Length: 350
Image (cartoon, rainbow, N blue to C red; front, side, top):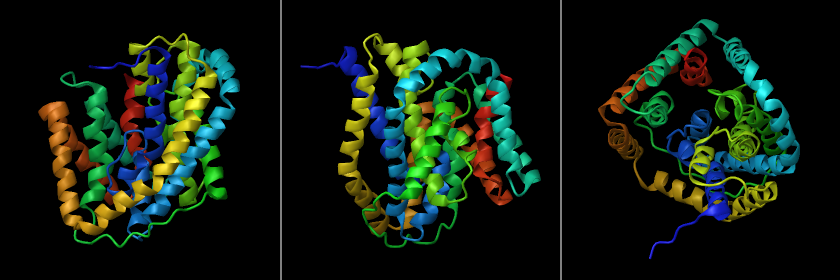
């Protein structure tokens, strides 16, 4: 017998999965170097913690930032409902102007502006290629593009060094988690309404040099983006995330209540907190028991097979082109956030 979840139960179940995923999806990015399409920038700082044996610290730093994002967003859901209801249409008229300002801010914040401009150009070139390919969908092409730009360059770096033993500790939240989480909340509000500006792009605008605070902000902006996408559904029936698109396509949104969203956010956060240390232990066990070279070869092989299965030979071509651009960006020592031009520029031009 096959059971199906429909109505408001189906919406809340999908939202619970989305929030849970945003709370813990940084694990593979931190420990293994596989970037998530919503926060590829977490891969590099996470890797640096892992190489010092502090992968669990990176995981909980990002996780507590996500939790902070859930709590603050739930507290402000009613004001956000009115904000999106009355200002979403106004923002749509000036969104391109805001996107350009964000891009220029990221470029000007670089220590090497010439290398930064070159990185933006290369990232834009990859994005324009992806957005103009008709043989596969744009959303499917994000996997090979982000894997090549952000993941593979880290995987091939320091190929012969072993991972140090990871210190598996349960870290308690601190001031940096809350400050970063609040900044991520602010960034998440704007990333949810600006097309082409993902959570990582808005997070780079945040004024913070502290790595722990930045990772907390990256975690928070993701969860904020997921929850606020539900408010946007209520105010305009627009889809800003894959989760929102799934809900609009499969369920009626008339019965969605803000109180339901708050309840799902709190429950999801509590359940993931109970499992968080086991998640860290699982990733740490993999790193300690398996040789790094084997892990990386396995990951690259599985990535290629997954890309081939989901996107065919076109996706594999995108992956190799993106990998080349990612490696060039690493040699230029430019900000990885500039590679987000692969989405920003196509959205402005197309």
